[in-house]
Image 1 (cartoon, rainbow over the protein chains, first blue to last red):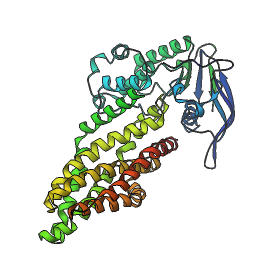
Image 2 (image 1 turned 60 degrees about the vertical axis):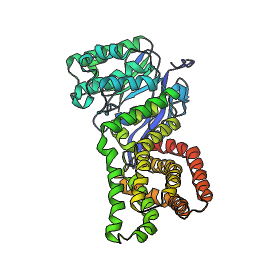
Image 3 (image 1 turned 45 degrees about the horizontal axis):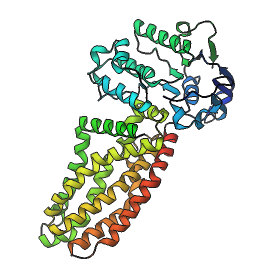
Image 4 (image 1 turned 45 degrees about the vertical axis):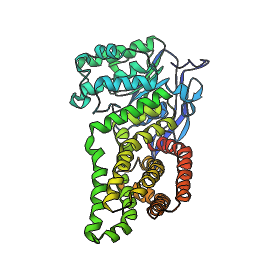
Length: 210
Length: 222
């Protein structure tokens, strides 16, 4: 879908980033960078600012200070045609409960310009028999899977995932870990906030502790 | 972009028809409010005709406000607004698509129902095309104003009353010109002046409004 941006430095870079909420400093002087094909795990206690950092990395929140760059461009200044290079999954699944699994996934594919087969991705996630069921009738874990399926449909190069394993059973967790591994293996970058870093850590993984 | 625009409109229409009560509430409110005035004032035909235009426009305006809070709130709550803003679809296109879908599901049924209510107020049949035309010109502006209000108050809990406070004063020119055009038509006079003004407001709202909504949405999701 989107043309790959020229790569002449780290793919993702956080430079001297600080985030304040009112008078409360969540973190400051945060510096890290990740090359293509790497995983960044963001760990820290509840309230440490993991979600805020991830939202800033995705360009949804402006850092109080510092700069976040994706392939050399400020994430907030990415032109629309390059915004599809970043996919963000937060605590909310981004799934419409009055639409079926197929309708939700087809919508994601249409707005992101992705090319993956909806039924194939749903099958891979174990959602094949639920394709025509409204997501309000699915369990929290199944809805989480629908939300994660959008990652495969969007063709993004940077995955920003906020506790993607929440609500998932053992098989779901293995599958997400496998997806992240495959994405990184294909040259993508994954930034994952997690309380279980062991599930995703591999040699070369960068761990950012808040 | 056309593909994304169509996808957002189609999705919002599908959602609206699956939550049909949200669709019906403003219409029922419109009919009930309009029918309360004859009960409170007088069922006399001459009096009904005198107050009919004003009652129609005020009821239409108030009922349109009922569906405002849901314009972006549902998308913000379930995370799909973030996904839309992070997609390659420009935020302005997303805003226009959502406003258009909102106008289709809230204003078009109201415009269709308005002549029936107008007849109950003994408005002459000859004034009905102008009433419909004025509503067709005024409601897109109202939808844009509503969208700006809804986007600006995205971070506020129970934002419905605040949106009303923001939108109603800005919508007063629509009420003035719309009611004036309908009134002139009821007395068989030329209606071009207020209709042109409504058209000018619609052009202004549709050209600048989506950019304001897009900017407000970006701030709202932070």
